[in-house]
Length: 315
Image (cartoon, rainbow, N blue to C red; front, side, top):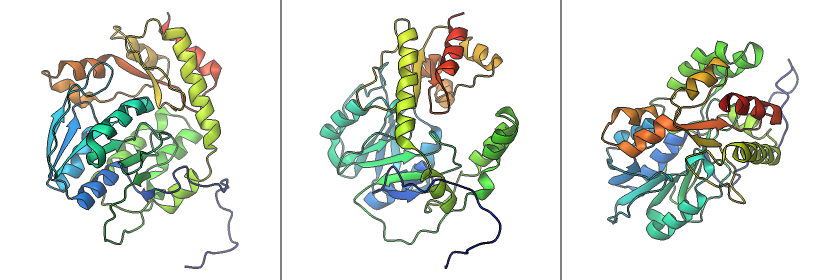
């Protein structure tokens, strides 16, 4: 279709390019996973207990058997699994800090490894390894994901539309975070059951407007600010490798009231993933979910914001 010229003004977005220029551009990370399942024809996938429960959705849609595996306190698998030809091993690159573990698993499982980089937007894919990314955890978009794979599906994908899922972002910009939270939950829930689609034009335009190099620098700087202050008391030791760009600073503490204290000061920390808490026989995963706080370190925040958070933690 020929693009319209003139008329009412439009959103003024910087005309840049995608960070993942060579990847397939799809609507959600879970649908990237589904794409891989369908393209590879896997019959069984091993997945970590400590992961988002939405990752089960593609497995059930594709009638693929799955089995959980455990991770240790350093967020790495505790055992090596002998895979059959039609099986795969899914690993989450936790907080964008486990790229070395990803590289080791690639040596072990080869093309049967699937890397979930939803928390590691800036991590480079390993050639020949199916790898997917989520944009929503890092940037102000309602959807959008990237997939690296050399096994393509022979199907025509419909293009998604995002404008009806943008309300929480507009409300937050105009009124505040709390005012948009219910809309955020509603828009997030609207992605459940969505078929595999191409990334929407709106999401593409927003993602192409981002200064990615600036984002990377701020995230690393803020992470280091936390590490300098909390490193000696942090019960999980995850060093920031040279090229790693973090989702958040994982701070593990014995204080069960710290999350509530931060909320009282209007500091909202994600909870990854509460679904494991109800499985009481999974002690390591339950402990991590209960005690690990992903402290905000993204490109929206300056040093003064990090110091505000640190002041509350150190009360």
